[in-house]
Amino acid sequence: MADLQLKDESKSLEDWADEIHSTIQEIMPEVKTADEKVESFLSGGVDSSYVLAMSDAEQADGCGYEEERFDESVLAEKTARILGRKFSRSLITPEQFFDIVPYVMYNMEQPLGDASAIVFTLGCNATAEHTKICYSGEGADEFFGGYNMYRNAERYGENLKTFYVGNTNIMKEDEKKKILKKYDPDVLPIEVAREIYEETEGLDPLSKMSDVDIQIWLEGDIYLNVDKMSTAAGLEIRMPLTDRRIFDIASRMPSRYKVNEEQNKVAFRTAAAKVLPEEIAFRKKLGFIVPIRIWMADDRYNQDVRRLFNSEIAEKFFLWRQSMKFLQTMLVEILITGEKYGQSIRSSYGMKSTL
Image (cartoon, rainbow, N blue to C red; front, side, top):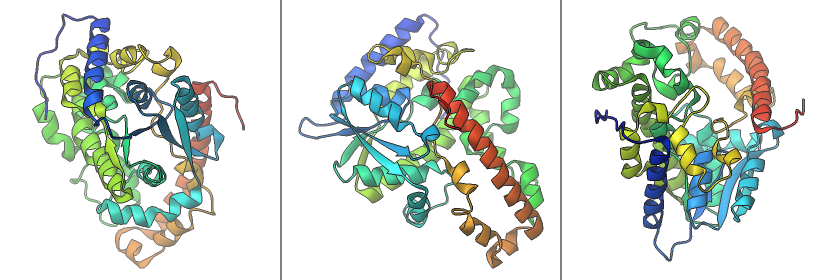
C-alpha cells in the first residue's frame, strides 16, 4: 500500500489547494447520474461540509444528541443554511443506542470496537426513510493529515514503529495484564502494523502514520462500517473524497502542506475555503462525537456491561475481582473525562458552558 512516489516540491500551498479543488470539481459530476437524487451526510466538520458545498444535494442529514455539549447538529444545520440546503436531524438517545447494538453486531458480521458505528447505523436507518443515495466525507483525514495526533509525527520519529497502530488501539497493555487470566505479552497490537512499517521504510513520519491509518483504520473500520451498515439500511453511500485521484494528490504532497504546528489538513482546508466560510473550513478537528462516556457512567445504561462481567463466559477469560475493580474505576474516569471533553467541544465551537 505504501506509495514511495517522490514528493512534489515545486508547488505552493495555493497550488495544492487549487489542484484539490479542481479535482473535486471534476469528480462530483461523475459520482451520480443526472436522474439520481442524492442527499449528503453533514457533521460540524470541514470534510462533509466541503462535499455538500461541491454537490447538488438539496438536503443534508445529520445526527444529534439531547446532551447539548456533544451535539454537532446545531453547527451542521447552520452550515446547511449557509449553503442554502435543507437539513434533517436524527436525534440519538441512549435508549436507541443500546437497543440497536444486537442489530449492529449481526449486520457487521465481525467484532468492531467503534461506538460511532452504532450512531452511524441509526443515521443510515433514518436517512434511508427519505433517500436511497447519500454522500459522505470519509477519506480526507487519512489522506491529508486530518487527525490531531499527526501534529506529533516529527516528535515521534522512529519510535512510531514501536507503538503507533492508528485509531485502533483501545486498551493499554498494563490494563490487559490486570484483568486477563491468560495475558500473552507476545500478542501485541503493533504486530498488526509491522509489515506496513517495513513497506514505508524511508518515508517521513507523517506519511508512515497516514499509511497505517489508511490500511488499518480507513479500510478495516470506516469502510467496513459504512459498507455493512448502509447496506443493512438499504442506503447507498458514495464517498467522493476516496477517489484515487484525490489519493494521488495526497501521495505527491509534501507533509508540511498537510500538517503544521497550528493546523491539520492545511491544504485541504485551504481548498475548502474556496466555497466555505473560513470559520467552517478551518474549524478544529473533533471527530465523530459519541457521548458513550457519559452514557456508560450512568447506571441506567451500564447494567448489561456489569452483568456480562459477572457471567460464566467472562469468568473464563477475566480475573473477576480485578475486572470489577477496573470496570468501576473506568466508569468513574469516563464520567470525569467525558465532562472535560464536553467542555473542550464547547470551547472549540465557541459555545457557552451548560455545566
